[in-house]
Length: 154
Image (tube, rainbow, N blue to C red; front, side, top):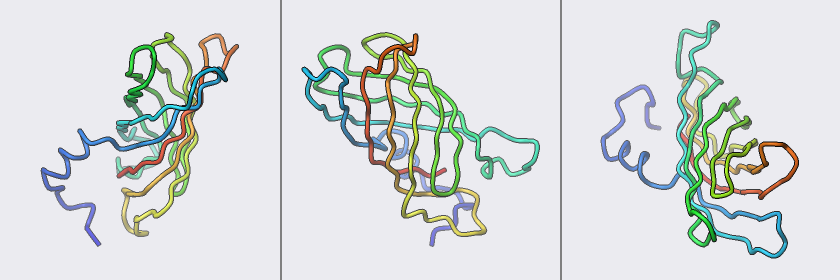
């Protein structure tokens, strides 16, 4: 098994920054619209905590990402930034999203599987499935739901 405390080769870093980390579908709330393909790029940065000296051991992350929906009638890109609480086999958190229909809330919940973390390692590379909602800022309407399959390192 690869030692996560050793330096990561440059091609892996480049691939991680530019290759989509998630692929899935957008289920629009409006029944007149069709289900669309979505590609996602997601990044997260651990937030240091008082109880842990090891930054990578933190369960709290600042998360951001971009989704590309090629068949979307409006702008094809959606951006979001928020907070993610991470456990070994699950994660969840709120975010603010900007899409073609304006600002909105984007809560998410995910399940990790094929978690490759050994008990002595702090990072936890895994595959995951996540469900994210796009809710209007007034919390009065659900715009759509996104289901994505992806991979992560932390």
